[in-house]
Image (cartoon, rainbow, N blue to C red; front, side):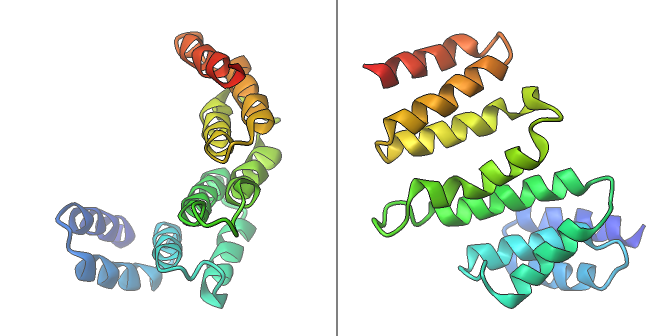
Length: 168
């Protein structure tokens, strides 16, 4: 489809660091019927520009999350990661808390985690690391332990080391 061709061009533009071309491709892609990919990319751009609270960004988020698409969980995940990354930029500022930065990730887990908890161990570890970075040991330990419980056996020893280091 034409939208898929634009996605391919967009990916190439990003790989070649052609930011202006990528933005033009997103604008074209937004005009297509199957424009979810481009809505996500536009949302990412707005978040990177510090405009995640803008009416355009909130409108895009509402569109993506109201759709009854079979990819709804995927879009919710992508938006949660984008929001987390945008909010994490401010973590060094004392006005911003770890709770606010991880809120999109926790909301995602709350919505989808009960259905498939084994796939969320990495998100739990990200949350644990954020809390540890902000010296919120109790919260870091809580999320690290949840991560350990649901992680594949191959990574459990590494998570266990993380937990032991937190407890020291």
